[in-house]
Length: 122
Image (cartoon, rainbow, N blue to C red; front, top):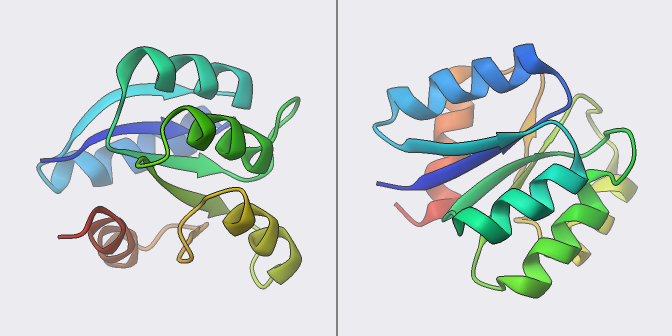
């Protein structure tokens, strides 16, 4: 079972992702509404996997991912974006340490599950 932190500036999107993750039998150990919160909570909780919104006010997903991965290189970070087809944004996130696959909003439950399972190595 994976221990997951969900990061998104939208409460609604966090709730939807948490429901999907829990339906997989995984544990949501924390959530954050900003990159700053994500960095702090990941340091405190040492999750196995993070879903990271790419565009947030303040520290965005790319910068937060780089800082989190610097502290915990083995942590899997899956980017979440409403911006489909933005190769440049995803390239930056991957360079920062995110997984190559990402989750696109609006969520399709089966696709989210498949991406998270591959990222976690299941």
